[in-house]
Image (tube, rainbow, N blue to C red; front, side):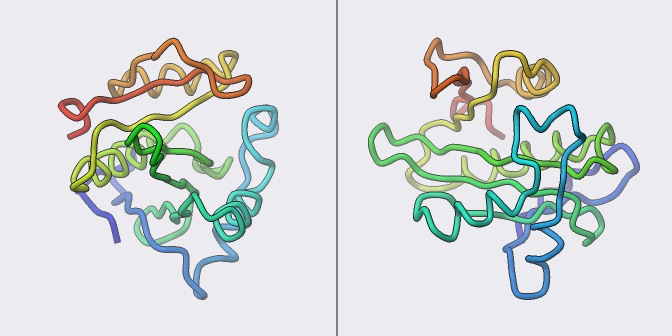
Length: 161
């Protein structure tokens, strides 16, 4: 369980938990708002499969007071020594409550405590302005790099706490 005392706007404790036999179905069923499906998968199940079959990504359940409300995953890039956040999906019914902000902050802090930590990176589609605002407000800065059709942003070691 990853927990740093972050809460959403409703005061619920936001935690990141291992995906287990008990919660994987709830995580798989997480679905964003319809207008976000051009930026993220229609269901978090796609990201769970990527974690299970791809070998690079590690899925986590996002919980609010121990109820699954989202999914996020992380990876380590051996090539440049960076940690990545990806597959962030907050259920449509939970959006606008600060769940995503708390989850990204918790994961960034947890990754920053790893002994091999250098920076956290993530990517998002340049038309996804809500994501851009969220990540910028947390301290992510554009790197000038692209990952497929997405821009890459990074959070340095000093800003991840």
